[in-house]
Length: 178
Image (cartoon, rainbow, N blue to C red; front, side):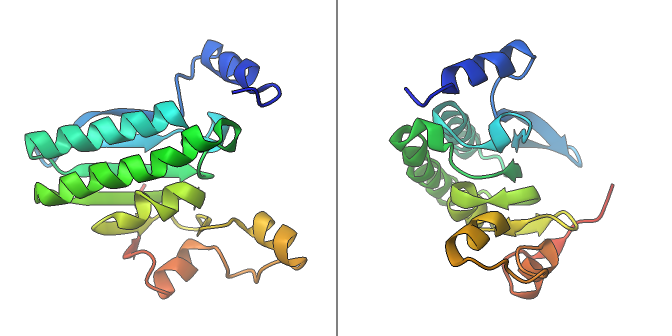
């Protein structure tokens, strides 16, 4: 983890009260227990690194073992590139844990916050049984800035929006509840 300034940035965020980009726990919905994980965008853009991926995988495994649905709240730029392969490996790890949840006949429900992009969308979030997105959320594998950098032209204004994702079947609903 010799990415210049990375460990210092993590230490600074942790000293400011943030633990990691993913928090996990148990909650209830209409009296039914559920396992929950939520991305915190203020911690390194909600990126999934080694610790965040481990938390997600363990939460999914716990839900499968205990016969609980899993609720995922995303606000993420994707994999934490400062961690290199340690971060990228988390995508396959959470997918394997998600498959265990499916084998336990428990649903994965995801609410896509702003943004939901990159490796998290391409792995765990994209495998949800039911997906909803917050209004005006940026949703897409590569964010609009990356698309512009690669193609040399900005994507259309409708591209990468939750409305576009809904129109094209990437999400099942737009959740505008407060």
